[in-house]
Length: 496
Ligand code: ADP
Image: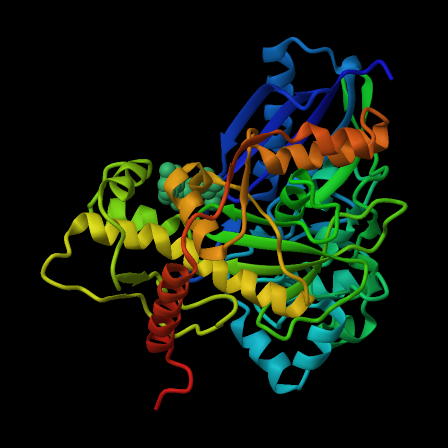
């Protein structure tokens, strides 16, 4: 294998990027464009699919030009993408019939309520691993068919195609030759049976979606077609949704590996092995990256809506800090907190509580509490929320989590990482590379291209720091039971 580089397309909610890695996993170049957000109505969020494709193409061409790397030296491309975001396009023209409906968009709440009313919740949980929610693609696709004039007739006549962002990009880059997706993206549609790995006829019929619209589902490390640049064909050998790609980049091919991405929200995923386990503790079950010899890998997933966003709140609304990174010094400057908690339920409480009506609160204020204490309590809340999800994962999987791998913007906060390890009583392992999501996609592609073996990819991820638990048992127990107490007080569910 003489080709030395792998490209990752990283198509996210707010930006589109292309990153070139060398065969040691080092970044050789990055090109990025911001993505325009459209908010046509309250609760609606859209993207322009053509902008997504054009930006991906521009950043791809720019990074090749900027680095001077020849396309002939690129072994393969891996794609990672914002998940669940839904595109429907015309099979003949390749033109979208509506904007992409973004995962955050909740316009389909009523469709979801109807499905729940029809008693589909247990079925959805059992076969897709998900809960009925407007977050997932299925009801967004139905909304487009119901609301774009003539769409359902065209869909029934086999003239429309559906895809998540990975499918859409591949369709455009291959000039309509490939209509494909991978297991991780399919598992976010609420239309895919993750037990038998097939599109689910019952759900397709409940949502009145013709099967002919759906992409072929492939393993995450396989041949998805090729991108042509200067008459050179570069194969797309890897595809995975962003959180699963991050899990893979963190070494999450192995059962028992858990990762937390501390971004705007926090996303925890645990590789729970090849046997399907439906959560009993408020998590969802989803497909982790698949390999030809390992087609079924299940992950338990828990999302925390407000992670780093609470630090943005300190900065922008409370104006207690100028920059997120100041919080680390402030946390280190003041003594440990006593009974002070910030519950950042600014968008309700996510996993494992699922209380959409809960509101944020600060508990335990006394006369000596000032802004530094409030800042510290806000940072610590990220760690407590993470512990809530980890506990649910341990209960569902029946196994203790022995190490937590971390990434995302707020994982750079060393105080937070130490505190996380302390409250979990588990080591926290932070890698050197911050682009772990893109690296995960590159690894999927590099495996198929023969640039790397499974052993190689395990050694590409280098450790920056391991945080070991230092807190004594009594302090840990008291602090966490205080947190559980304030969570109980914050919940609206079961209250009169
Ligand atoms: P996203 O991909 O969701 O945009 P990032 O992974 O870029 O998020 O992380 C950005 C988030 O991390 C922001 O919400 C920011 O407030 C938070 N953040 C960044 N640096 C720190 C820090 N040193 N301490 C705490 N939070 C931080």
